[in-house]
Amino acid sequence: MGETLIVVDYTVDFVADDGALTCGRPGQAIEGRISALASAWLEAGCFTVMALDRHDPEDSFHPENQLFPPHNVAGTPGRSLYGRLEDAVRQHRDKAHLYEMDKTRYSAFAGTDLDMRLRERRIDTIHLAGVCTDICVLHTAVEAYNLGYSLVVHADAVQSFDPQGHQWALGHFQNVLGAEIREQNEKVEV
Image (cartoon, rainbow, N blue to C red; front, side, top):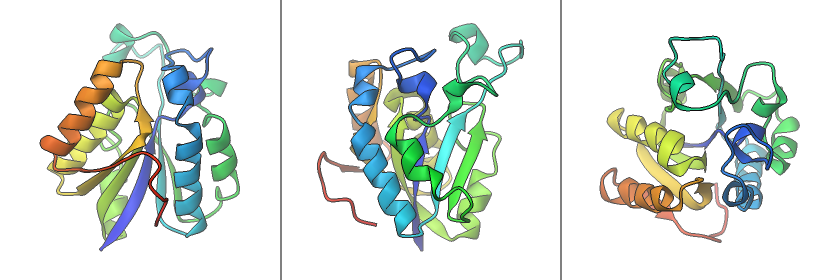
């Protein structure tokens, strides 16, 4: 079976100093690691997913519109990949091994074709990176676990605006979802 890397919500709105719902410096601190992971997976021709939040602030039925300020709004620069990740992805945009997908809920699986695309490729293990550890990365991991995928969380490539939530989520990944936690500065291998 196979493996994939899913980078969750590493966008301008979630990471830049002036992002609409930024985790700020903690998110910026993992830029190098996320870019290195994505580059390694993409250069190896491995199926790699960029799961990007997409919202319409006029959608009065979307639950997040009641909880958070408008963010990752369709058609805005806030949805762009942040920093060096954009550079790492750019040259692969026309390749079949890169899937840039929209998601409208915390989980990259909720209401999307992600599970189908992974199963078509016989993927059984998901590597996770991105933001926020305790929100969208967590919900993606829980749903992946419930769908029967094995999980690897790159602890040095996830972050949150809430340090306690971040630490709690790392423990939850390992102790409740059985995820392998890859520690900081381990060699990038695909």
